[in-house]
Image 1 (tube, rainbow, N blue to C red):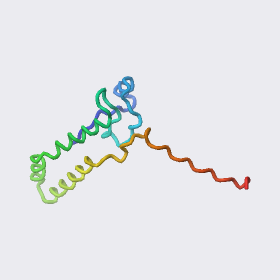
Image 2 (image 1 turned 45 degrees about the vertical axis):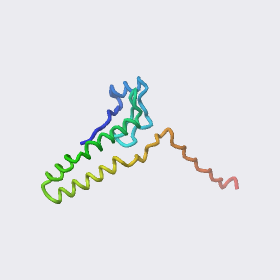
Image 3 (image 1 turned 135 degrees about the vertical axis):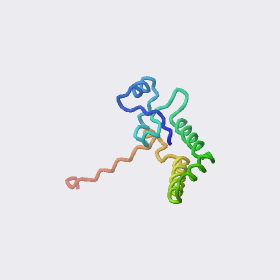
Image 4 (image 1 turned 30 degrees about the horizontal axis):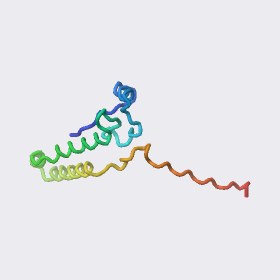
Length: 122
């Protein structure tokens, strides 16, 4: 299971609503799919929403009863191993900081290439 923040898809009522309220952050669009908030709320920033999502998912996934039941009901050692691998992968995805944590608007501008002198000017 997963937990996603409402994502304002282009042309939807939600997109219009968050734009009208000044909550839309276009620099976060296409920064990691629908799991990355592209909007904030009146009280939480996009970063706080993302932190809340990760904290909630970790609390759900790390319940000892959930882990034990999942592994015991897997049915075979191979499935148990696959669940273990998938679970550890998911765990590290949730605790690792996002590579694109800096919004596009705050990233340094790339340095333009230096123009090469033309043959005619030499």
